[in-house]
Image (cartoon, rainbow, N blue to C red; front, side):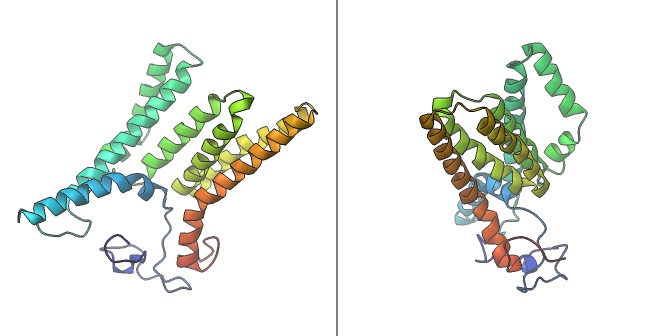
Length: 232
């Protein structure tokens, strides 16, 4: 979209699904938009670097495939993985010793595919999944007092939507706030002011989730002509 004004992958280099068109005659796109949203600031830095080099006749226009774009997005992946482990460390150290939390993070990193998807195939979406799951875990563990629950809920639902836009199956993480909702409804004191505040907070939380996830839904509407990707 940034270069050719559309989100059709049919004219992209070496695209794997160029032979499969959806009912709206766009090339099939199986990937969510979350990683692209997280990469966007770093990609724009890479584009700025290329524009400067082109201006001084030190490079040619590459339309998003230049070394500056690859390096900047690779650094973006490294940044989000680092932030993900920092959030995970903060979460663990709030429940266990700092030493145990640090060793747990290192063990997780070295025993998982994250080194491969951080330093070798750094332009795949695994970084976004790890970062957003670490972030939502951190937000969930650090729940505030009830008077600050609205802002916390807004942040929680925005991040939950981003989790779903990083990998569709991760939307199952919504089971935590949904379960909490029913537990609170069951155990909440019956004072009208508490219940009214809780209902308003839930409405704001739902609104934040719908606004954030609407980005992905809008893309589905263009690609598939539907509110969800139902094209085989």
